[in-house]
Image 1 (cartoon, rainbow, N blue to C red):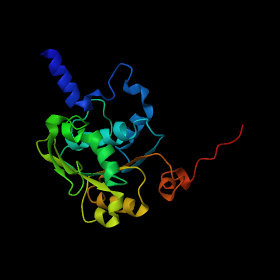
Image 2 (cartoon, rainbow, N blue to C red; image 1 turned 45 degrees about the vertical axis):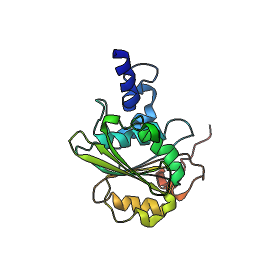
Image 3 (spheres, rainbow, N blue to C red; image 1 turned 30 degrees about the horizontal axis):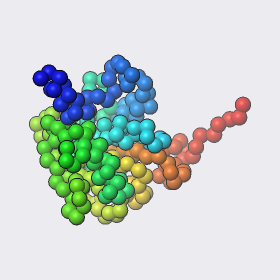
Image 4 (spheres, rainbow, N blue to C red; image 1 turned 90 degrees about the vertical axis):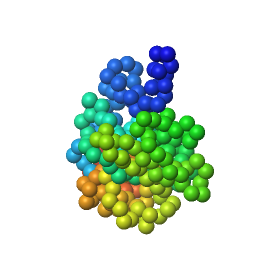
Length: 225
């Protein structure tokens, strides 16, 4: 019985497996991840550029988004905190991309919801997106304060206008978005003093969006030896 309970907890509380104090996956081995999280306490806009398959989406963008949705911050957390339920968006390039990547990371497979980063006990409701099989539109999550956070899944293919007319606390953009959409995201989080996180691989080169995060708008010049 104890083994069964431990297995079920591990399966439905994936969030707890990230960044432990000790062991082969201990958080001291992820200094860049920790730096990104800490910087959220000071900076409203954050971007992490990284190669594929290093955990930037799930282990950084998805992980932090879920902490804010649930309020279940670990003891070591030094980043931004919300002591109330939040309104959040998570967005990627297409509906299929969002469904197969971000959505699955957050709630698990459609047939086994509650096995993603959002703990099953905190996952209250998932409303489906019309016209797309097994795609979610809005995810409702219990916050530790007793209220309910909401996370709307969006896509860049919906266009800039779909990112208008809302006040949002947290926006997670996975993959590079058009500058017009990014500008709307900044506006949506302005009155809430919210945060915008970007996680992607720079496949399009040094675009204007990337350059605005670099000192002086350009790559640092490395002096030759």
